[in-house]
Image 1 (tube, rainbow, N blue to C red):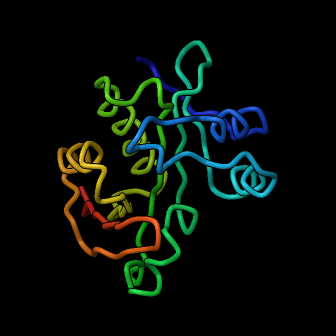
Image 2: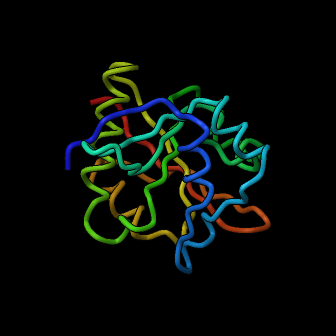
Image 3: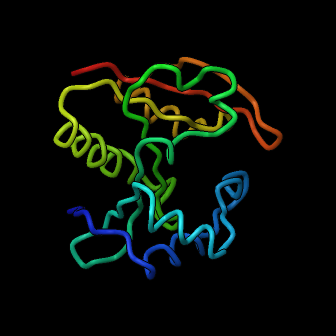
Length: 158
């Protein structure tokens, strides 16, 4: 699967917000609201498409990638690159995660250089956690919100 970056636009944002994941991943389902579209368009979001232009997923960096409750417990004290990402539901659980995540990590290193990267993942999402471990990410801090438990994971410099 050949992947490319595209700029976020209203069509991609609408498609992302309409994605419906099966349980227990339905936790990641979003509301298709003006505020959600505005966030995707204005914050640091990029989309990833395949060679036919089909939307594969997205990623974001900075505060957009952080869970707000994590700030209260010091999960984001250290100033490093935070990433968040999502892959189209039709592609999850089918062995596409490695290629997708490789593409994102490589792009981050090209953009930011040899820097540490942190991500936040819901602790029930063992499928994603296993993938991140394959890339050398290690667990750091756990924290809870009213809807889920999370952990941050970090990968040091190359």
